[in-house]
Amino acid sequence: MRIRIVDAFTDRPFTGNPAGVLLLEAGPFPDDVWLQHVAREVNHAETAFAHRLPSGSDADWALRWFTPTTEVDMCGHATLATAHVLHTTGTATGTVRFAARCGILTATAHGNGSITLDFPTAPLTAVAAPDGVAEALGATPLSTHDTGPHIGDLLVELADEKTVRALSPDLPALARHSRRGIIATAPAEDPGRGYDYVSRCFFPNVGIDEDPVTGSAHTALAPFWSARLGREELTGLQASARSGLVRTTLRGDRTLLTGSAVTVIDGELRA
Image (tube, rainbow, N blue to C red; front, side, top):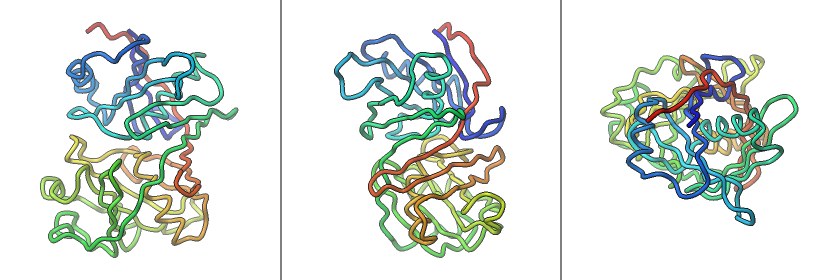
């Protein structure tokens, strides 16, 4: 079967977040053990597996995501990568509906090559900073928020962009403080550079030390920064080594994530 590696939330190869994408034959998913083996072999933050659903279903495609170590409830960049493959291969046009563990998600392609995802907004709950999280992160939180069941992260607000960029956390210690990991964020030092806030994401509990660009995290970042900046439409820069931009639009209990993607490898899986 064909396997693609797609860089998501970027329009340039070797930046953004790479994801494996496999479009499977219609019918049930293969055995979970096989899916996990493939994801471990691909060894990117996520590998997406999708198969077409019968006509009349609530969605067009069934979609699942695996890190190298586990299946996850929700993934933005691998959904963007899957939609990119569907549209660039002519397999789909317009809006595609995906059935996933977190519900029905949609992906709408635009004429400029970008794609808008419609995801559930993360329910943020202010919580006290857990003991030891400042030491593990290497920075003092200004506020901390739980991001709800589908993401399972701790959102940590830091003082400024320089602090976020300089983080070098103790990952084993960080793993004790959330189900998936930590989203560290701060306002942009200079919004004139084309982004409103920065973030970095560390997910040691699912086998990802630092995720390059995390769509799902922006379902929490969008309501967090929209409340502070007073605007529904924002742009976030994930300041990892690969870097990428995510344009967000808050629509109550839904968050729109817009970005581009580029296929860098198109090959054949022989396993």
